[in-house]
Every structure is written in structure tokens, then in C-alpha cells.
Length: 100
Image (tube, rainbow, N blue to C red):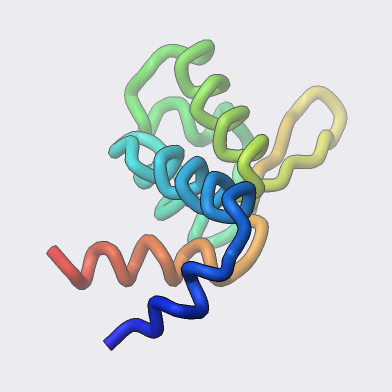
């Protein structure tokens, strides 16, 4: 059983951050991006063909994932490289997959 008293004591801002985090992960294409990055860092140009959407759409997905702390990026010349910010992100996705 989940300890609800501890969660009830969490401030509303923290609960809203959790909700935003889960909402961002609620898109199938964003989950696909996270799973794709499970093996390591990739350039946006490598992600686009796998996702099968336009560059602006994939760029928006990547931005949302980064803004919410799920991914981090770095520039290498003209390329933007993305990776998962922490191992826990992938664990959350895998846990969700195991529940379905």
C-alpha cells in the first residue's frame, strides 16, 4: 500500500511538477524518443527518421522533454546531441510499460 500521508504533505508546486513530467511522457512519440536514447546520446538528425515526423515536430518534442528535465542537450558543431538526463527517467518508462 502506498503511504499517502507522506504524499499529502508534499507542497502543491511539487505535485504540479510531477504532473507536468508525467504529462510530457504521456505522448507516444516522446516515449519513443526516450526509448531510442536509452542506448546513448543521439543527434536530432538521427532521431527524426526513426520518429517519422517532420523536423519542427521532433524539435518541439525534444524541447518539451528538455524543458521538463527528461533530456539534456549539448551542441557539437552544428549538431544538437540529446541524452536522457538521469537513469530514473528510463526506469519510469519501463515501469509504466510493465503495468500495461
